[in-house]
Image (cartoon, rainbow, N blue to C red; front, side, top):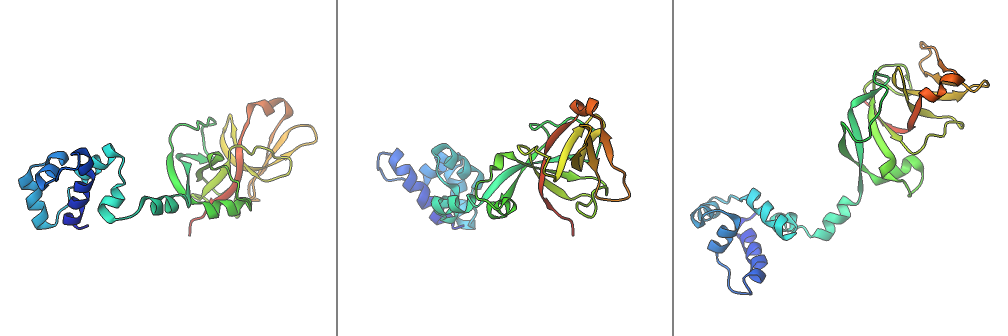
Length: 222
């Protein structure tokens, strides 16, 4: 970042506000909320008042990347559009206690490459708003899913008749299991780890569970 070049850009932006009158360093300092002496010292040291410039750009809806690094907004848009942001529920574990699931609490946003996300669906029409992420806890789904892996699930895909792995909310907690419909109308929750027995939800109790979404991918631990 070259402080002299940055100041010249700020002068260009301010020229329209100053009705094309000549803009001096003291004007830039005043707009940034610092003294002209401070700005002069910064120029000598090559220091950049980043926080003040960020506020300046935000008020004028100017790209700070262009001001500081000469990056054109169009190139930034192209790079940004390569990714989609999904909710990652860092404090919620599948196969753990707490049957409730709130889509609006306890999450952070993470970026995932759209190419990777589309490859999961073999399609270019993924609705990223329906994709969520949370942690696996325990070994009941090994070797398919391992402890502490992050799984991606589609909250809008709850159709289990064709098979698959699902996140399921029950009175006993939140689980990630394979689902199979029983002949009597009950639901079988199957663990891939053969050391665990299946759990059966009877037909009379089936209203007590909720299918949160189908697991579509994972981020593994090496």
